[in-house]
Amino acid sequence: MNVFTHPPHLRQYLSKIRAANKTIGFVPTMGALHEGHRALVDRAEADTDVVVMSIFVNPTQFNNTADLERYPRNVQADIAFIGAKKNNIVVFAPHVKTIYGSNVVPKDYDFGSLSQTMEGKHRPGHFNGVGTIVSILLKTVVPDRAYFGEKDFQQLQIVKKLVRSERLPVTIVGVPTVRETNGLALSSRNQRLSAEQRREAAFIFKTLKEVKLKFRAKSIPKLHRYVAAAFKDHPFLRLEYFEIANEKTLKTAHRKHKKTPYRAFIVAHAGNVRLIDNLAL
Ligand code: AMP
Image (cartoon, rainbow, N blue to C red; front, top):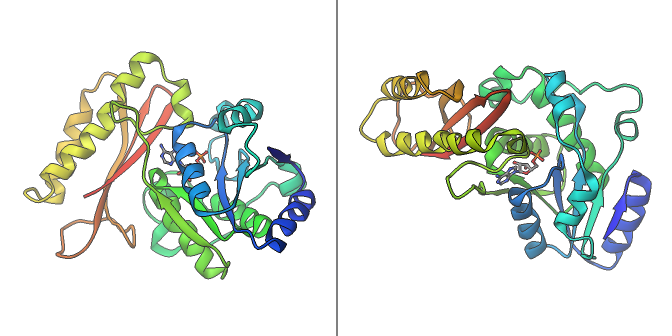
């Protein structure tokens, strides 16, 4: 497996791949890899000849310094996890200074309604950071296809919009969420959960599934009351937000309209670990 830290070296390598008429898939990650990331790589390997996986903990998308500092980092373990012997996979693990120089600030984006709710509202500046790094990485790698998880559904929609507005010649592919057998969405942050918290955190997906079951019969305000009550006395989880949104615009839904696709979103905290999940309704 080739590992690059400098963009010019990566570009030089990829220009040879392109000259040989091979296609390039791209999987951006922040490392601490798990089976969710592997699903993105598997999909990219199935679709394209060479897969570039970036491992970069992007400081500009963290609105909370403690969260950035606590974020797990181990590039060698990540390389071993993906398979050090694989020669169709390339890792790009740049340093913060290489990407940002001494000016670690995001660009200012206008993602319209897509960034006004949920993560956009609860993590101010987060999507400017995401837009900044995804744009830099896509312009460095210039892949044919790039893969993003539906676990971060709002991010997936924002990346699609970014690519349209910057006219980047890449197809964005969404990949379904990979879960533990108890339903908990895999996340790098799960490493920080105790065994008990990990068991109890399955409650998030269980609640989303209940909402899906009730969605036809119950009004949206009733569903909000149901979820608030379900979390109220939970001994291990604190609800940050529950939202039902139009899947396309991500605008908050207050009432149901026929033929509109909806999705339910939950963010909850187990101790100081922030957990995110969503489900199509
Ligand atoms: P991260 O390293 O958390 O920034 O995630 C890198 C990519 O992996 C993003 O596109 C995520 O949406 C995706 N991802 C993270 N967890 C999962 C999961 N459990 N299932 C599918 N994709 C995931």
